[in-house]
Length: 132
Image (cartoon, rainbow, N blue to C red; front, side):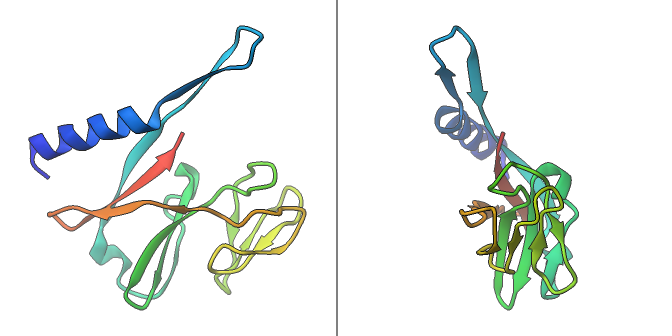
């Protein structure tokens, strides 16, 4: 990625991803998005769930030709999920489970896991946009 493209992408991310919310009590919450470099696409050659970036809020999943990023945060109470050997996901906080595509299979969670935007740059690096 050249410098100009990086600056354009950064400016676009800042323009669309930074919000301030006033709760009416004088406190302000901010929400930002950031782009995480998940390394070379070649690191994800085999089908499976890669949990290298769980602590940064996502799993990388390869299934055939598809390479996706799925949130690693439970939609119930925002606990970090655990990737199971069968490629499903489990929340140790309250017991919610999700299938390999991120669909709820057992509550209390009611919402599926969100897919996160991915981009492969000209150097073959996988970039994942993560909400802050």
